[in-house]
Structures are given as structure tokens and as C-alpha cells.
Image 1 (cartoon, each protein chain N blue to C red):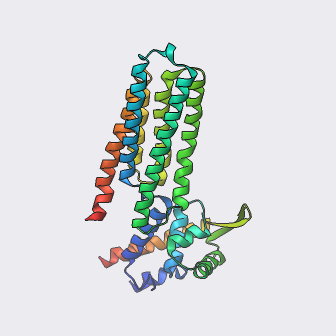
Image 2 (cartoon, rainbow over the protein chains, first blue to last red):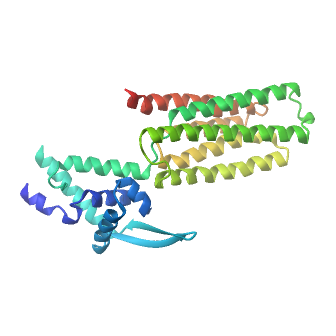
Length: 99
Length: 207
């Protein structure tokens, strides 16, 4: 049990980061405001979590414009997808052991 | 709180919920189906009355009469869509969710594309006086639009799409009965769908 918990990815130790990854797993790309509404967090909070995920090369940022407004969208990378799947597998194993 | 400290099955449930909420717009109101169906039935009754007065004789369809039917069609479309929008907006407000998000934008876009294509077909048929193809193309393109949109909302909408497409295909082979098929597809099916959806999703929330 302790061993499995150690295997859990530390990057996904946050609810917000798990939320971002979940949303990006099923959507090609999502913009900042939609992610913010989905997770009900503040701008600063979301930005810092996005930064951590980007630094780990789990997500990719695309900067664009809609009219004059900046529109920043995020999508998952191959590395991110793999890491998240592994994390899910470990969570499932934990549940099985628990039962 | 750290997910590692919380129950892993809770974390998995949260993940599943976010995946669903972010990819699908789930707040479509069942009432909007009932509303759209009633509007369509009223419209069909009015059209039926007008046709009756013309003795169902195509040679009496003047440009003015055609314009009247187009106008009626546009009014029905706007009333059905507008009412459906308001009823859904009400449900979104009740659930304290966001109306305009990633999923709803995708839903609107994916439905609009086949619908617009269908609209051009209908205008074309009207233009060339091929009235018998109007009802089938309305039904088929609308069904395809629902099918296309079902990826971004309640999957049940797919079955409504299948039924509309089927009705449209049958309708092609019964010229002169278009209005009845149209009333069945846009009126009766919408009302039935709305009641089933309300029963399945909205009622549970009330209890």
C-alpha cells in the first residue's frame, strides 16, 4: 500500500491539476476562462497550476487572438497523457488493494 | 487537500465528473423539447389550414403564398429555438452552472453546420418549385445535425436524430404527405423526447 502511494505522481497531488488534466484528456484544447469556470478557481491559482504542468511538459500552450483579446488555449502533450494514465492506473490499483 | 490523503475512488469519481462536464453540455431542458414540439404542431396546423383553402392545388401557389409559408417557417424556427434557449437557460441558472462554455459552443457549432447545409437545400428546392423535397430534407438534415451534436450533450439526443432521419427517408416516397411527416418529426417526436428527457433527468433533481 505504502509503495503504491509512493508511486503516485507528485505533480498530480493537487485537485486543480488533476482537474485540468481530466478536462484536457477529453478535449482537444480548452481556453483559460473555460478551465477557470470548470474548476471554480481564481486566475492566479489556475495560472500557477498551469505553469507547473507546463514545466513538466504535460501540457502545451497556444497563444492566439479573438479580435483584439488574447485567447490562450491549452492542450495535453503525449508525455502528459502517458503520465496521467499511469496515475489513473495506480489509483485503480490502490482501490483494488483497499477492497 | 491532497488527493493521496483522500479516498482514491473519490478522486477517480471527480476525474470522471470533470471529464463529462468539460466535454458535454448536460443541462438541456426536457421542457424545451416539449415547447419546440408544441410550436411545430401549431405551425403545422396553420400551414394545413392554408393548404386546405388552396385545395392542395400546387398551381395556385403564387409567389406571395410561398412567401407566406417561408415567413411561417421562419417564425416557427425562431419561436422553437428561442423558447428552448430560455428554458435551458433557466435550468442552467437553477443548477448554478455556466451556459456558455467549451461544451455548449461545440454543441452549437456541430449542430449548426448540418442545419445550415439543410437550410440551403430547402431554399434551393423552394427556388425551383420542388416542394415535395422540403419536408424530407428538413427531417434528414435536422436528424444529421442532432447526431452530430450528440457527442457534446446528452447522448440520448442521438436516438431522436435516428428517428428524424428515418422519418425523412420514408417521407421521400410519399409525396404530398410532407406536412404530416413534418408534424410527426418536429411536433410529436419533440414532445415525446422532451417528456422522456424530463422524466429521466429533470424530475430526479426535483425529488
